[in-house]
Length: 120
Ligand SMILES: [Zn+2]
Image (cartoon, rainbow, N blue to C red; front, side, top):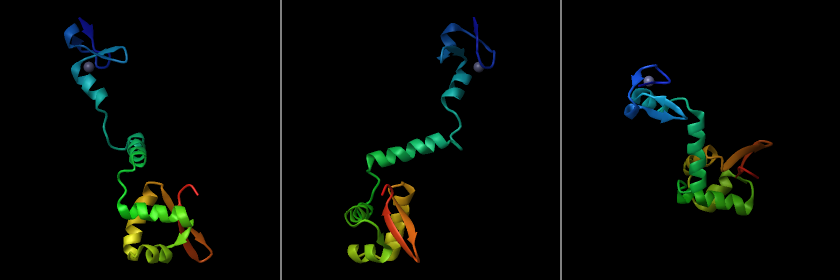
């Protein structure tokens, strides 16, 4: 007869779960294996890097914008919309995602706002 390392309940050997070298009862084992998902910055971070690595979440328009910024460097919104023949709201929607994924960013130059690749 062993005791759960966490709550102290008596557990039979065949009901004990090994977690990092400690014996736990089933309830506590489930507890440590399924921590609450809320407010977990690390999980959010992981989710974000996965998206970037796979690159699969980009829409064709978002890829076009990235390629355009790669070729031309920083551009203003009007230049992007003119070159890609899209509306300003289409651009803003697509760009919001790119910025969220840290693939692109906007910056101010005098009175104007320019858009460029995140790492440039
Ligand atoms: Zn326990």
